Image (tube, rainbow, N blue to C red; front, side, top):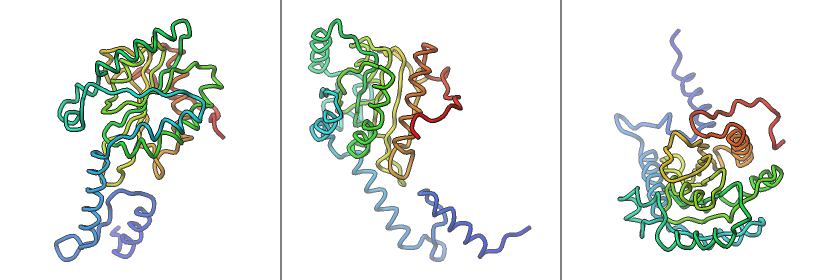
Length: 258
């Protein structure tokens, strides 16, 4: 049965109301309408800004410490933003000074072993981290404490990629490493935060050995949903002693957060 044009427009209007995806774009003849072209240009500019906006760890340190954890600022081996974009391998390992700092830190804390290491990295959208990291931690940290997990300081990492958390976690000898990181900006969302969790982190872990939670932001997955899922995955990782493709959230239990 052929659907009438008014019905199609009505259905599109409903879909546009529930998604930020670029659907049902207006046209002027064979071209997009000027408004749609301008909106595309604006979203593209926002995505570029998210990539190049400098990370400000000092702006996060105080509100995070107010949540009851200490912070430590570190840097990857990528010395600046352009190097970071051109040499992804350098974003996956610590710079020399930060490696020395962590060695001193872990030596000073010998005998007070932690279970979980949390790293916050700018990734490809420092805007996502600046907006989402603190409100997410305000939900996650009480859940971690309720589980009795001991935490390292929260590490604020500049020019960081996901695998950087493996080296940081290995330095502490923790059971789990969690990194909050800015995702590659899209044209519908430039402020999306992702989370990766690795069991027994160490240099050389592959992406298949991590679990990922994506699209955490206002308008995306809520902080409560993401924290609930992350804690379930962390629980599963500790029980099964693995993470990645072998670990799924198949729980049908009552959510940790009502």
